Image 1 (cartoon, rainbow, N blue to C red):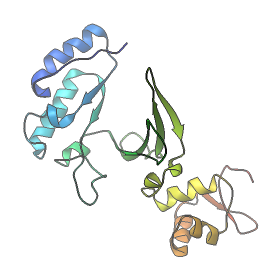
Image 2 (image 1 turned 90 degrees about the vertical axis):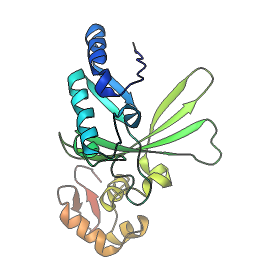
Image 3 (image 1 turned 120 degrees about the vertical axis):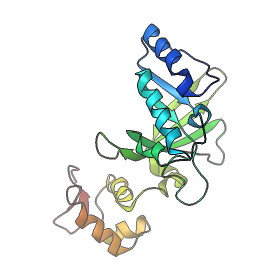
Image 4 (image 1 turned 180 degrees about the vertical axis):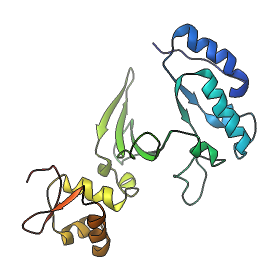
Length: 210
């Protein structure tokens, strides 16, 4: 059961009403769309972000908040506005959409974890969304299937996705992920808990049998 609650005032003003709705309907999780329209001031102000998060805590319900991103370099790292939007969240994800030529009524989504307070950064996730007249279907996909998403992966992440399909030499890894050989070598040395050098010199993933 999904409940929709229309809000026309800032979240700091609506929090009492929303807390009552959460309690009456025993709501476990809420989605807020979107932060910018729920602010009681400019999103660039730290005190506005602080009041927003206090209101969320008062509502007392697990929640997911949709935010816009700024334009320019590194715009995919943090939400638009004060740094407190990123700092105050337990986890933040950047979501990117992409379309592939020839696909109709299909949307590809890439999810990239930027912050995680309760554990390690999660691996990127990709979903294919298909729209029809009477339903919307979601399907998991490999993040590397969409070039726009693959570009956002780190060298370590690209190596992991590549080596899931089998061990490779360092030269093959560098060539297939378009990285410098020295960068690949350093990545292997820094993540020995992930990568392993086999007897024949190829590099594999720990826990993956050859």
